[in-house]
Image (cartoon, rainbow, N blue to C red; front, side):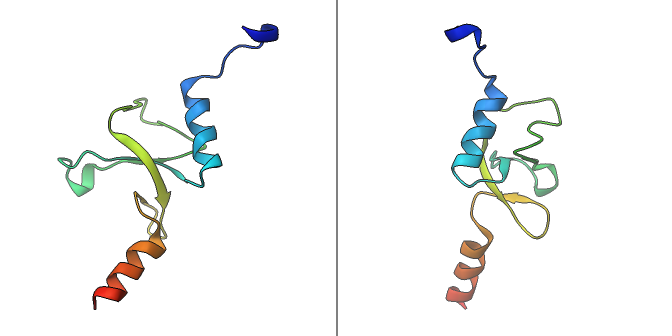
Length: 84
């Protein structure tokens, strides 16, 4: 330990990275989950379920519907408008 300062926890490292890179939280990216089973969490309240799924959770953006997605809301809406 440098200067008796303990190293940061994994949750602190992840939270800081999310802030630094403009993400709002995490979302479970398991493609086999039903839409109702997909979970997401805020960067200030990571893993309230008690599980940190290191292999499945990815950085995400919070949308107006209160859910977390891999893409920014503007990117999804722009793709829908451009395909119409």
